Image (cartoon, rainbow over all chains, first blue to last red; front, side, top):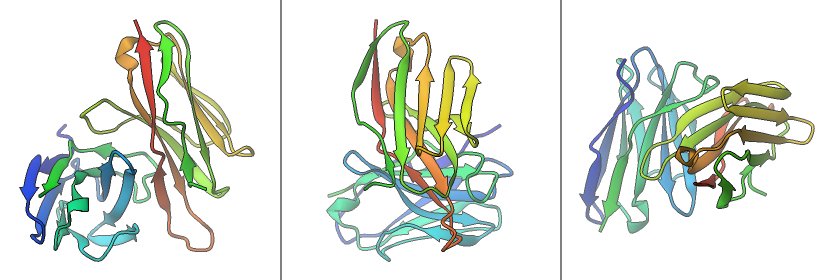
Length: 114
Length: 115
């Protein structure tokens, strides 16, 4: 059974640009969550989608947005990139909408903003 | 006070010993608790979940939950060098006031098992 697939694996962008990251969850999983991981802050919750609806949102500025499609695939967009947005962005999927059964993570997208 | 706290370590234990990893959380309304393992350069991997007070064993791993004291721990018996990784505690909490759950990770404890 295929795991959680994130694309691309690596990205280098310039300040001010925008970026879109993609995540395909495990087949049958309707919940997709996004996390930002940095050495200093650990895993910070961005948002969660379930059945195309945003169920929860973390404390990130409006430059960070996301959406989920009818096939449960999700995208995350960051506009007007800042140097501080450099991080590993992880997508995680679960069967339950509240993560009660735990998450399966993708390999992540490493974003570098220069 | 952080919502989920872990000692960053590193926690060094000799091969074959028991490694004990601890996590405290702030919200008494927390309902479910998880331990993830993250190897360097890899993404987190779920290794244990626990929902009620007491112990839960899975192979060499035992998760312990004490809701009254608001802590959850992970014991790794017969530690192996391959267990060297960062262990992340995660707590799923649904504050009654908001009804919106939060799934919060601690910053992780780095474990080093010495051969």
